[in-house]
Image 1 (cartoon, helix red, strand yellow):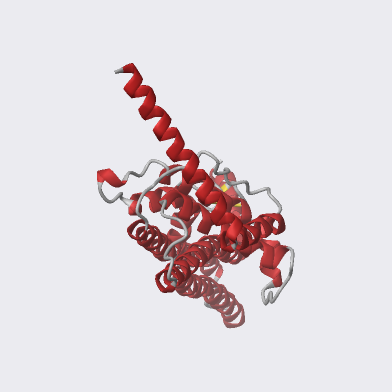
Image 2 (cartoon, rainbow, N blue to C red; image 1 turned 30 degrees about the vertical axis):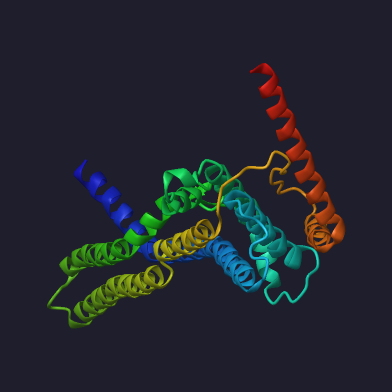
Length: 331
């Protein structure tokens, strides 16, 4: 019975010794692939926030230099306009026009990683929060809004929409220490497997003793390689975790987005929600959406637009006069 148990344990130990290093290498390759996927996913989130910030500052600068000032006084309307502009322009330039696209590979990865759907979710969630801001209640907490928008985004918080970024990021942070433990464990397994062979030495037979010692030293050196491999994988993975830290990117993304919203809130005078404004539709043809925006801009420059505004103002005044007359009659 004891011999059977000893044989089984020796078999398990030899199998673990033979498979440990290949498993460590395969685990490292899988960890590197997951780290790159997480990094790309989070960076594309930051990419959208940076593009929105850029367009916000450009719009505010033009409004500052323009004699007429800002076209829109409502925070909701202005935010919606800039978010839709950011969304449509980013994906129209790469996915439709293919104009000055130096990163063709990212177009395919954006589809795999659901980047366009994630950006659409950012727009929708931001507008859901923005419609409840009130100027008569003081400055809103736009930082909380920015954090909530990005933290609860299902496309950017999960690789391929299924693998949670936070969970796998924590696992990858623990992996360097696991590599060290596996390396030391492999060394001890190698020593345990090699030590019993010393019992077969016959000091009276010098040649056989030398052969046993040579075999023992070879196995010992092989077991030491496991520790060396564990140290190398530990150092490499530690550097990758430090250089591709998604938490730093997330903080920068939230800060950029919050700054853009904060600047827009300060520049606007109210947060009126017009009844005729259309909801954001991420499935709308970007060319059609941008064409409508371009036509709207030209229409605002024409005299007919001013005449429409004057007619609306006259109609509003007539309605007020009518209401006043009705009130006087009732009194």
